[in-house]
Amino acid sequence: GENVGLHLPTLSVQEGDNSIINCAYSNSASDYFIWYKQESGKGPQFIIDIRSNMDKRQGQRVTVLLNKTVKHLSLQIAATQPGDSAVYFCAELNRFDKLVFGAGTILRVKS
Amino acid sequence: ETGVTQTPRHLVMGMTNKKSLKCEQHLGHNAMYWYKQSAKKPLELMFVYNFKEQTENNSVPSRFSPECPNSSHLFLHLHTLQPEDSALYLCASSQAPGTGGNGNEQFFGPGTRLTVL
Image (cartoon, rainbow over all chains, first blue to last red; front, side, top):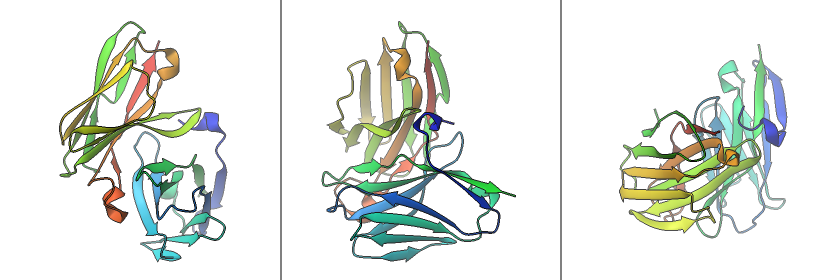
C-alpha cells in the first residue's frame, strides 16, 4: 500500500472484537479533530470529528475520545467487521485553520 | 460517493512530459486542496484555494503549477517532474477554512496515482 514505506503501526483484530486506534497530536491549541478512513485505492473518507470542548463523541459503531491533558485522541470501533480494514488517520486543525494529518494506523480484521 | 472526482486515476509520465491532473467537486464547496501522499511521508498539503484564490503554497516546487478557474474545478499542471514525485495526488474540498468545526471537514477524491519514469 501507499504507506508501507512509513512502517505504519498495525492493529490486527478478530472480527467482532472492538478496535481502539490511538493518535497523539502536537498542538495544545488545536480545537478540532477528525478521524479519516482510507481503503486501498481510495481517498480518505470522513468518519467522525470532535471539538476540543468535548471529551467524547459517538457515531454509528464508532466513538472518538479526546484527552486534552495528554494530547491524545482515540477511535474506538465496536464489533469490528472485515470492511473496517483500512488505514486510519487522525487530523488536527492547526492555528492557521489547516488540517495536519498523522501518519496513520493500519487496521487488519481477521475473519 | 464523496462528490469529488479526479482524472486520470492513473498516470505514467516521463520526466520531460507535461501533463495535468483534474479535480471536480459537486458539493457546492468554496475551498479546494491538493495533497501528496507518498510511501515515505504522511499526507502532505500542497496547495489551498479559497473562493478561487490561492491561499496556501506549502513550499511546493515550481514544477507543480495549480490552477483554479472556479470553485468547482482544480487542476495541477505537471512539467519536468522527478521520479521522487511519484505518489498518490489527492484533491479535497470543504466549505471554507476559517469557519471552524464542520466547515473544515474535507471531502477527498479517489486520487491520481502518478508514476514518473
